[in-house]
Image 1: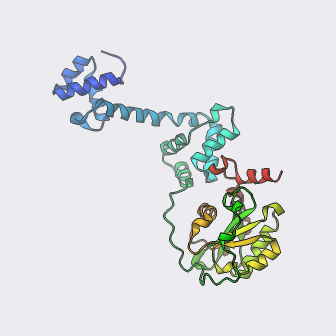
Image 2: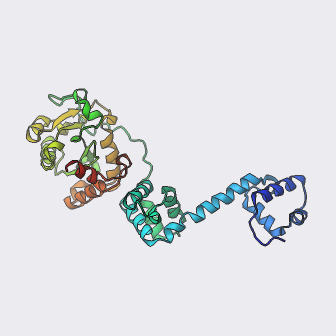
Image 3: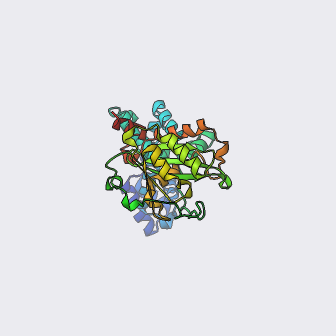
Length: 328
């Protein structure tokens, strides 16, 4: 009898043919020089029973099990790598962002290189417990289709002297020149509070704007206060939807030198960078958040976390790194 347990692909093919011929398991085991229990276990592992056993299917099951069992070992045997992955997940970085960021930070250290599939596998093979639950909760969930926001901003189209997005310079569309922003409000619980969001189109730099009120005057003042801190070359334009909170756009432009352009009604894709970022922001401030109860410090900590998040579109650099590089 052979001493090793696992069957080769050729033995699996032989087993498949002999089973089709109708021989007993004892007869097949004798013919193959294998123990009967080994073949019984092989058929059970194939999950399709004696009549459904096929060599290629069984081989695929084996390869899948090997794939799953070996993938996490590199992580589990490298505490530095494991800590980096866990820290990245807690920052709400995706496994893909973590894997590519590792290549940037450790270009010559193969022990710190891992695929994003391996990170997913590592998570799912962790023992059930608080750590596994915590890390899985950090994964960004697949977002549902966004509902139309209805009357979130009422009386659209009544903003005086709007300049349409159609008049916006073409350099904004192709992102060839930094300094062009997109803006919006994330509305809080019962529509009684809000958080302002500004995203720079080229670097994906995000500014979160705390608001005491969400009327036009309060929004204009808060947005102006935040954008005044920017270098002059990063203050070129702002693309906004037609929410009435931006009805003081002319005064905003006068104060900041940032020209405001308005997207077409119900066209969120015209501010796609902002819409996508709002989805990320919801990881920090879920729907139903009362922004009146959120301190400025917490909002700015979320802002720093977003700007320190590696982005695929930036070749896994962070918005902060790209922004700083442009100012050198």
